[in-house]
Length: 300
Image (cartoon, rainbow, N blue to C red; front, top):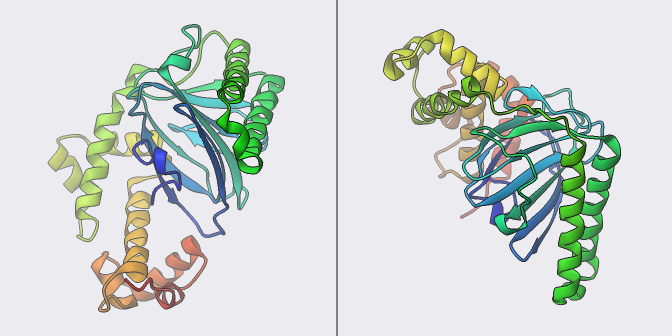
């Protein structure tokens, strides 16, 4: 499932981990820049920046709880990356039912050479609380203008003023950050290709029976490497990730599949052999029974 932000689809893929009402997203596009605030349930994000520029993301409150590339995001902190930088971000079950996250993409011409650069992985940067509070306020003010007074944005002067304020707020955050930042260690960055190969294997074979040993043999890596890569980047074990992918596929088939995809057939197709256990896990993740999902099937 993609983040409901059409321009971001090449950048970010989003998977809700558990049930809960999905909040609304507010977004604004200004002269190549993208501003967004979304209220979302505990979720898993994965992405690679595919356009020249800078993408930063952050919790819209100091109470935000999330992890980026296996590391906790500081209460007043942001994640950031440039072209081809990769990230995995998630927040766990114990997080608030809905958390508000902000994201800003600035095209390369708006990126200051004084700002820190990321490596293969997005950086994670603690900043001063006052600077972070200002960035959150500037983002919300810009989105409010776009939502309530869109005609004002027809003025090039107004658009430039908004983007200047956004750029100044981003710059102020970077200026208060420590000289060294996380996110560029080569050993962790080298795990990206291994991770993507593991995910591709799982996506290609999730409906079959296989073990970690099978993946290790096919990819010619050790089982310990698989465990390390998944837990450090994904924040969950291979077993947990495989279960999540299978549950997502069942839900997709129940909502959008052909008529033959009843609950039992959809579960078996995705590799769930024990119906009682499957039903419990499905409810835990999505907050409704498989039959309730089936009753809402989208008619194509």
